[in-house]
Each structure stands twice: as structure tokens, then as C-alpha cells.
Amino acid sequence: MIGSSASTAERGESKSRLGARFWRLWWANAINSVGDGAFVAAMPLLAVTVTRDPVMISLISVGEYLPWLVVSLPAGVYVDRHDRATLMWRCQAVQALIVALVAATALLHIVTIAELIIASFLLGCAQVVITNAAQAVLPELVPAAALQQANSNQYTVQTVGQSSAGPPLGSIMFAVAAPLPFGVDAVSFIVSAALLASLPQVRVDRKQVPMRTAVPEGLRWLLGHRLLRTLALLLGLNTFCNQMGFATLVLLGKLTLHLTSAEYGLLLVGVGVGSVIGGLINTRLARRFGALPTFVGALAANAVLYAGMGLASNGVVLGVLIALSGLVITVSSVVTVSMRQQLTPNELFGRVNSVFRMIGWGLMPLGALAGGFLAQLFGFRAPFVIAGAIRAVVLVAMVPILVDEMRAVHVKV
Image 1 (tube, helix red, strand yellow):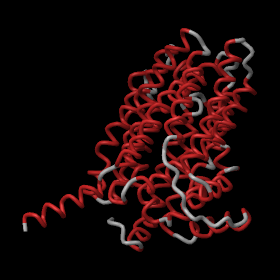
Image 2 (cartoon, one colour; image 1 turned 30 degrees about the vertical axis):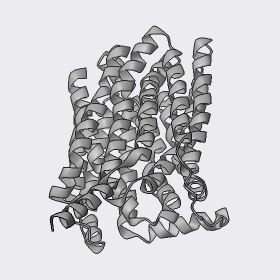
Image 3 (spheres, one colour; image 1 turned 90 degrees about the vertical axis):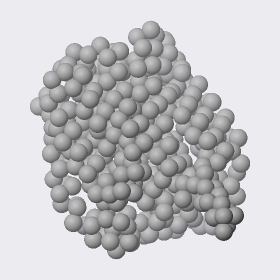
């Protein structure tokens, strides 16, 4: 009996282990995320040296997120047709080239706002493929029992790099020399691509159906799944509000709260700090309270936090609220990603995920543009306050639908 129990425990432990292949993916994500964080802080700082027009500044975010609306569906088909790790490292090589060109123009003092918008769009196109492939490849690398933990680890290290380690590094490097953070980001892409290229290819027999057939197949599957369809719509409205506020955050920080470039970089650290905590506690919250209470509670808290960001009296208060927002965003995001991976067939995951992301992130460029106009018309605080109000109204309307649909697929509510 003792031997049998030990054997059972070992099997259960093996099912929850993440494995060496996952950690290679994790390291690639960790290294690249620090470079991206430096870029996230440096890009708006570079843009402000060119123009202080809030609409023009917001167009950089529009360019970054527009690909989720226009190239997400065909990207999903490619993710289902090809080895996913290979797609990721090739796209990162392209991103390295684009960021290196931005660094070169910054060095030569010939940067234009049009260049930054175009660079953001091209980087966004590559990121659509990378994000889709990264979520699709994870179930191929780890056991199903370890998905929640794997997603939590990936999301946490990504947010830490992009929002804690990277931004202060990027803002300090920008203060030293404007091209420096972009050069560091280019190097991080190269190192990350090398790690991903070392992953063994997963050869899966995927049907090479025509694009005109493959895209509608993923679209029909998601639209026919009531729970995932509802989550995609809810995500879309919330990411719209997210970009409404954050597209002009640099103007709120520098022109209203009078933060220096270094202080602005530190402001973004809050997202990473909160995300670390969210990554540590989200699995326990979901297991203890169930998926729905955890998800809804996180979204409700974020609605209040967004309104508070718009009313923040100084950089410290704003930083704390951003940190709390990072925490609840991590909690809600890990719950939905894990649910999507568990409910979607692997052979359709790329296409279904691309439709989900198109719906969920496709409104982000419109949100960024709306935020630019709101900031221009009503001041730099208005976008956050209005975004918080919209989030609250949408959540109240969606909760009854979520309860019914989660019960229909036997998700703990």
C-alpha cells in the first residue's frame, strides 16, 4: 500500500512538473520582457521629444494594437499550420531589426512621429503571431495539470520584465542616451530568439486547408461557444478602456503631475510589482473561491482603480493604484487564458485564439484614439475616470450572463 501510494504521488507530481522545455521558453520570455520594458518606457519619452499633441501620441498605441484587429485571423491560421516555436523566433528576429532601426534614427536625431507609429504597427504585427503561438505552444510543453501554474509563471515574469525591471532601466538609459534602450531591446530579441530556436520542433499533422476555409472554421467554433464568446466580448470592452487611459499616461505623468523621465519609468514599475503578487496568489484564489468570483472581483476592483488613477494627486498615489491594477489584471488574465487552453481543441487553438484576441484586443486602437481625444478635450485625467465608469457599467451588465454560461460548461462558480 505504501509503495502504491508513493507511485501515485509520483505520477501526480510528474503531471504537475513544468519541465526543461518550459523553462527554456520561460527564460526567453524573461529576457525579452526586460528589453520590452525598456522599450515601453523609452518609446513615449522619445515621442514627447517630437510632439506633445495627445492625439499624435495616442496614434503610437493605435499602431501597436491595430494588428490585433487586421492580422489576427490569418496569424491564427499560420500558428495552426507551422511549428509554433519556429514562428516565434523568426518574428522576434524581425522585431530586433525594427527596433535597431529606431535606435539608429534616434542616434542620428532624425526621428519622426510617423516613423514611431509605423514601427509600432510592424512590431505589433509580429507580436500578434508571437503571443498567439506562445499560448498555443504551452499545452504542447507542459501537462494539462500544470497549465495554470505555467501560465501564471509566464504572465508574471513577462509583466515583471515589462513593468518592473525594464521601465526604470529604459528611462535611466534614455536619460543617458536616447538610442540606448532601443539597442538593448534589439539585443534581448536576439537572445530570446536564440533560446526559442533551440526548442525541439513539435511535428503535428495539421491539415493545410485554404485560408478562406481555415479562418471561418476558427471563427465558427468560438462564436458557437457561449462562454468563450462572452469572455472575448468582455475582454474587448475592458481593453478598450485600458488603452483609453494608458495611451496618454505619459502626458498625465509628465505634464500634470510633473514627473521627470526617471520618475515616469518608476511609475510603470507598479504594474510589475502588482503582477508579481497577482501571479503568486491567483491560483489559490481561483481554487478557493472559484473562477467566476475571482474573475468578477478582479474586474470590479479594476473599475474603481481606474477612476482613482484619473483623480490621483501625485505620482506616488498613481504608482500605488497602477500596482494594484497590475495585480488584479494578472488574476483575471490567468483565469481566462487557462480556461481558454482547457476548452479549445489543440488543432484549432491558433485560429480560435486569434479570433478571441481579435475581439478582445481589436478595440484597443480605438480606445487609444478615444483617450487621445478625451485628453485633448477634457484634460489628461479624464480618460482614466471615464474608463473606470465604462468598466463598471459593462461588468454589471455581463455578470448574469457569465454565471449562466459558466454553469453550462460546469466551471465552478
